[in-house]
Image: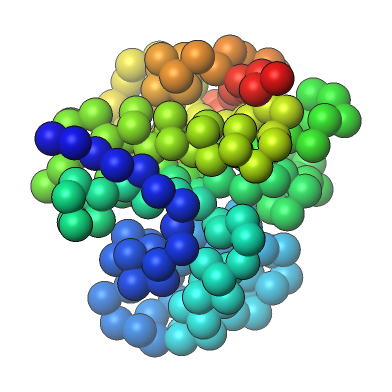
Length: 190
């Protein structure tokens, strides 16, 4: 299997990973961390997909997509922290004043899990941030110490996933998801 990770510039491919089965459904679309909370709450139904279409057309786009040949198999949301809700999140600390990038979502399509795609996605997110001049990249995964995680909450990744990608713990957070604490993991790109 030759997984290729590319910038998320094709709306249909992003939609395949984060969009709903019904266009009018109010699902995340991976917007909850990418746009301000007030805007996220105001977007309903098809407006959510329309907003993602706008983000995909921007430079840089809102993340990276993994492909197995022509098949879309994964997504990672990654962007400058200043353009995400992490810029003002009181539960996730700022380690310093660097213009870091944040990776907040790593999703693998059902039927492709357990194939190492999340590792490829995280590596692709790191390269994407590096290519765009990021001095460092952060993630805010669960510190589950190997315990099983509900798959709907696994989108933030695990501390072990980030450690295998070379990230180190930079800080504790006040954020808890699915009963597990989230930690701030960081990788220097300079």
